[in-house]
Image (cartoon, rainbow, N blue to C red):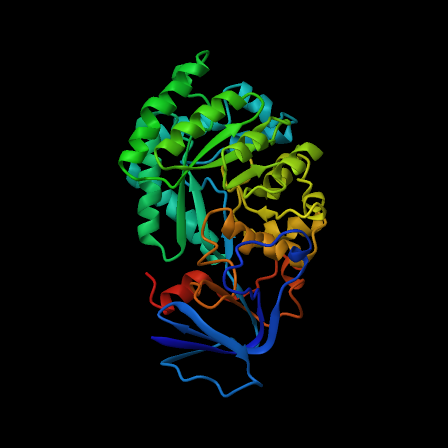
Length: 415
């Protein structure tokens, strides 16, 4: 079925075929066409252009953009939306002045979420988690990476990943699954971290691979969690089972996580709140996407990643939500874009590219999502009429979506 989106005030985020990411100065540009149309055939962008150049093409269905922007949907390459309950009690601890590390040292944090998840059935976990996915779709997210990591036993990690698989089958947006068994050390292995790493490598990863439940393997390589050596071992075993590496790195300290991620060809290294010039140099020439999570910095009062320095060094930068119950309880990528501008001093164009094409790259979907490109999936946002692209992060609480990717993809035949 051919669908024509017409009366587009501005078509934004246009990239040529084959452009996988934007780096350095490229991130400061967003190609646009004013007074445009866009043609979709069976859910795929086939053509677009300015109204002034030629008559509108024929189509089976018409969608009136009513003068709004048409842009690629947000891609969120780092989330933990599959969890049970919440951790609002720890919110009070944070207000009282306890740090993330102090809460974790007292047995809270990730371990609290693991306890809740263990006592929650798979069906109930799916019910709670799909609500969060529907929430972020309504806010403009058209691709979502979801991690395990609140199981910390083989059975519960598999339960999480099976829920992610069910979510993928239930929603029209793109879902990617990441195995994060090395998120923390399970309670049964307290004082025996090496034994837990053995469990991750010898039992969890083979079980995940046997059911084909994940595309990626991730490790929390940071102070108080997993060492560089342990991370390297987990990544090696994951790669042997067909899982591509991703890394949590440098959230709490300069951990060496960036270096081990680059060494093993990680698709992305995420967090980066505490990095030095050495990490920037290591990333130069690599295919690894530096991914920053300003929602966690906002919620925890941590430093924000040095995104501007990375861009000045010619590197790409992606932004993601880190939606999770303990350190970033929000999956609003528009707010992430706004934090990129307000707190990280990115231009609206840089923040836009960090939340679309570069975040698509960071979850391995840049060939089909993240830009207005012929041949890509029509995972789009149609906005209300806006004065400029800058209005999106500027007025970050004003409703701006007229038709989001969830509704639009259904209209185009995705279910």
